[in-house]
Length: 502
Image 1 (cartoon, rainbow, N blue to C red):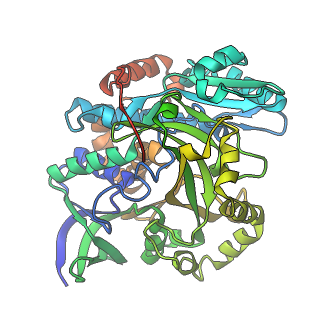
Image 2 (image 1 turned 135 degrees about the vertical axis):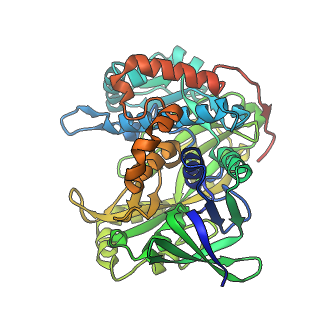
Image 3 (image 1 turned 30 degrees about the vertical axis):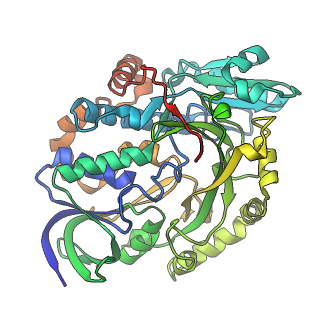
């Protein structure tokens, strides 16, 4: 066993969350030693990878599942407000890194791209109009546009409006200040920066166990190249291993890890292989999930920029695998069931029979059945122009809640921290990566409360709106939007090379 006593921080998993936390900690406490363990050969290969991550700029500008309709017909925009506020925090932090020269070439990880919500049918049009009327009064969404005019829609969405039969009304909202974010590229850039600043990043190293010791944690790590097992000690451990985080959290044995389970859901996307079609669409377009479908199934047609090339993806279609990671084991789901969460898991199984039925239906779909869903977005879509790709695994959190009772399935991002602040874990899925900076700031607040007063001036340098609600400070919001757009070059037009195939 190789003992290391001088590590201040261990980050498990080389994804966007660890990259963000490591970068924040280096800015706030540059004297701290940071060690990263990643079982794969390089950073950002699981949930953060650009073709595994569906959340490519979630800012609540067009995602209709973030603005729900109450039984009395009113619209609840609470989640949209929160997600957008958190995305603004991410933009500020990335802007700081670019201005400091710590991140170069922002166009390689972020680009300006309109976000559009599109609905058909009288009830859906009524919902979208009410949503628009509410959101346009909110400083966060004040540049939102609304139309029911087919001619305007044809300008906004030429590919989607071509050959469309208009029945029972159609409407869309559009926000031009949306973005497309390549979180795989951003993750790799952040880890390159951490490596340059002295962080010890060890790939092909898998964390096998964690044991709490006086003053911190002993972490057992297997070197996958040599087969040798090493023991490392750290004062603080962050578990950011995507779907793999649940098993590691359970190994900590902390009380907060009890009564928590996970349900894996994989995503399948259609990717367009015809550059002429790709060029006809330039937006992220979200529709409404079908009645009875879970929130993660909201269909969207996304322009994406990957390796500086324009691509077009549609989905997600839900899939199922018992693996918690794309590179995981078929035993992951079974081995996650422990005496401390078995009743939580059983309760969820009984409550989520409709979800199970939905997933089975989705898994059994043929390509032509999937094309039928795509044609609701692109009426004249041809099968030969589209290929199927399997995206990353998402593990939805199952826990007991006051609101939902025992075994409630959560559709969101969950942070679990130990009472003494020496360990934290990130579980869950969307909005995930887009809100990484705020989520990591929350972890710092929970785990290092005694340092926050000292760190606050630096945090405010990195995130000027820290501690404030931007929707309550419209002038500051406009200043920040102008500043981040300039730093991230979001107002500059760049013509990417077209993609011939994926």
